[in-house]
Length: 453
Ligand code: HAM
Image 1: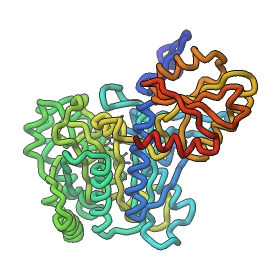
Image 2: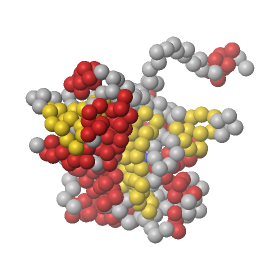
Image 3: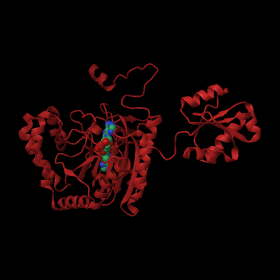
């Protein structure tokens, strides 16, 4: 082995010194940011449940082959962005860069074909792509994902799109646009692909170097090049809809009819092909109309030709099951929503999770007997669903009051020696400093009454 090869085989890892930061492109979620994500996922799950979907959780790691075969070796998501690792026992695993392949793996593994079809699932959590971090683009990002597995009926394409929009509307996002295309199936796509290749072969001298590479490895992806020099060629390229076979044409027509019946506006984007290999027939992406997200880097695999960042996208994938070793096709359709991007557009304070809540009262204890009794008081309030803040490790009244003031909590509950004996607490209004002694048995009711005022 030459010296140069050795260097390549063992990339030098950077030596870091503390204090450490989170890995590039990954971030901690805490406080209101955390609650905004939790609130979004709760809302999305609620809407999906109403539409008849049930939850599934798949592992964050899958065998690397699930993505290589499912998503495609030549896709950027697999060839450039996969976080892969070898375990101590030699297994090749990868952090999931998307949900669909893992969910189909689970469907096949657990014999879900024998359940009434289609099987309608949703999942949410973190995905990992070693991409160039920028606004709206992270290496760890979160999606809400929905899949309808085991039916080729066009109404399922319409349901997924409707559900996507219903979730966005549920969190207050209605200013959106839907782009749609059909890229055909195994019968008609080869004809289209051939035409596309012929067209680009004649124009290879006029396109960017990335496109020359795509021409060799993944010609369908020529259509989502963002490079200015390629736009004219792209506009003149043959469109897939003109090459659809009868069945695909009918399927697409039906999808459009359902959307129209539902009053959903859409535009057909001939350059929308999506960056993952498993798609057949319908593909779609959703954007904010007044996009204020930074335009993506040139060659971004996840945007349509518009240059805006997609809030999510999806489509039909009728051959994925076969690619993953299934013995029968499992025609399916689904989408993934980019939750980090969606939350960036929303008023975070409007995404309140069901169970959190800002503490309504601050609990203060004074003296040993009160400290001993304090956990029972907090438990009484928890049972009554009253969230409490405290600094129970502190002893002095002034330092506990100072914390309550800093946290801007309107009422404090004070438990001193005397209150311990009387089974009461003092409830203090932090604004006008008025105080009232309240029996412990009446405390939850009293606090709830304050919250209503
Ligand atoms: P995707 O378009 O690759 O589709 O990802 C779904 C969404 O995740 C994107 O539209 C975008 O909003 C968000 N996203 C992707 N990469 C990033 C990133 N680096 N940072 C922040 N957000 C990002 C899929 O993954 C398919 N599995 C969706 C699907 C489900 N198709 C059928 N079923």
